[in-house]
Image 1 (cartoon, rainbow over the protein chains, first blue to last red):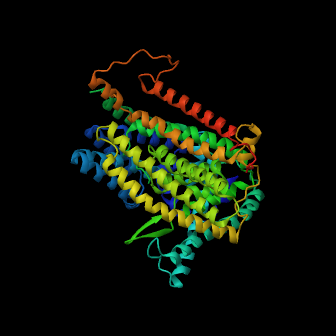
Image 2 (cartoon, rainbow over the protein chains, first blue to last red):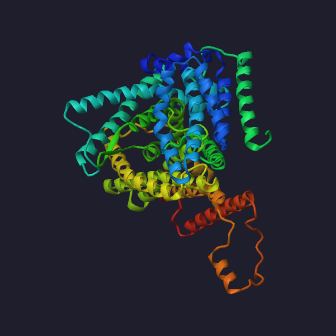
Image 3 (cartoon, rainbow over the protein chains, first blue to last red):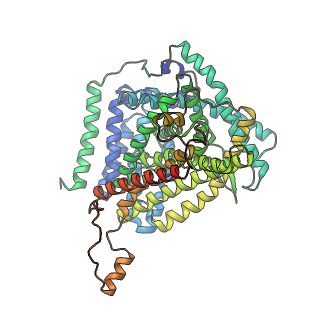
Length: 251
Length: 326
């Protein structure tokens, strides 16, 4: 019964899910999407031959472009992960030359893009319920679902506290020797936790009133169906093709 | 410290997943017995709180900032088993919803930030608090600061080692070379660890003055469960085991990197033409020649040393249970 409560009305949480309704991905069973995409990512991360890495990147770009998720949204999400990807690629480039650096950039991107598409094309709670239906432990998925909902509530509170701090002239401190600055930052982090704790009892009463029993129930039953099977088969075939070339079974 | 997909050698990434799943299964077993139905939203809110607290940047100097990891804070507040489950949730949300860290590398990311950081932080804190005395605010603060600093430093050392081993075993196709990864990660995180220590102590002192019972869970603690099992009834022993477990997690990674060449003494004996005589005592075990026999020998050695250490501590009266189970 967690879903009923945690779906709530957070605007930002809804914003995250807006593209799942416009994309055909939203109609596929979450288990099929998780199995297919995670299988492809695991294989793409294994590839070392540059031409295969380029092929995996091409598959990822095709998947992103046919998903009907706005390219601007995908590009924005990819840009957020780019610093981590570039750090790895540049250090490999400095050590072992441009070819390995470029392969690293392409390989990391071919893993990141399908994940962005999967997350954008699936409602968050469907994704978590998919994990539960794939037998991820209930404690973990229940915590995931509740924590994801509260991240937005608490980050809104943090934003309000940050504005209040700025209004009182605090600019973020100077260094680790700035005792006043660090005390203000510690108190802010502490306040986030205290407010979280204050909210916990009210949350529990709300959950109990909706029949909470720690298990996760979906509000919309989905079946694997033909679309799910086709999705898994497509991704499994692409993954099998790539790994066969990598291991020298074909070619 | 979030590793993206495609950066790590597949063997290293697989080992990370295997170790993480094993530790997570154990911690969920303990956590299920500690978290009551009423506590579930509280723990979830703490996960969200730690996630949001990671957004609070603190100044390091020279215009650079760092942010809280929160593993030690989480573990000291609610215990290591729940902290491992909770930090796993934080890392999962970061990877799935915000693209912070990859899926193939999730095992390693979770191992570093959700297992090694809380276990080290809690282990060092618990050990020091027993040694320095539980009552004084100063000793509590020092133990907490040391635990928080160690959690960041050891987690970053693990990350640097994973990058270096990936680079070495893949001949440069994956990972980052040790000359860059180790000094950069350790140097940067030694300073970030200072910030983590100051903020963690600040948050805990704020919590103890404003809401001392905010995160007290209602069910019995791991210490009480361990006391019922009858072997681990001492906080010092539990803390020692937590730190030993962190070392044990490095065994498979070390074996991947281990050289098959001769050690210093064997080289010297070779050069001087000295031959080895027959041993006086034939050992029942050997390290073996492949990864799995060496791994088996490593695990067996770890268990024997742990049991011997526990026995010695009991004989010396350091872990007789009179220091009180938590």
